[in-house]
Length: 73
Image 1: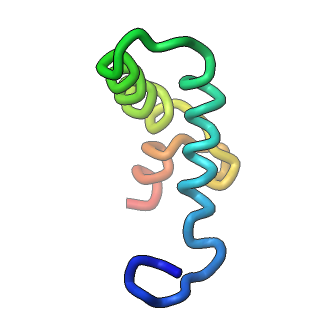
Image 2 (image 1 turned 30 degrees about the horizontal axis):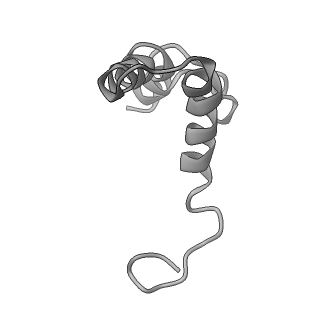
Image 3 (image 1 turned 90 degrees about the horizontal axis):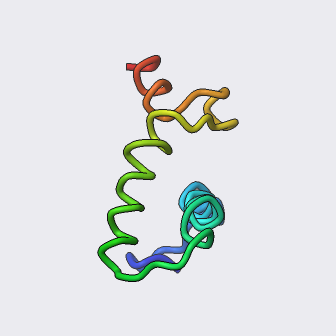
């Protein structure tokens, strides 16, 4: 049940779950973090420097999220 009290579609969170699985496998679990700030900075850099501009996604036809957005805009 979602926070609104209405049952949701079982696929509602699929994209988010996939993203978290990916970031954990490609970044988080690959090293030990000395501080929370180091982890936060690395996550920010991963999302804005790799995941959105360069990482290709099969669900987007092999395009990065930014390239896909430019195409459909």
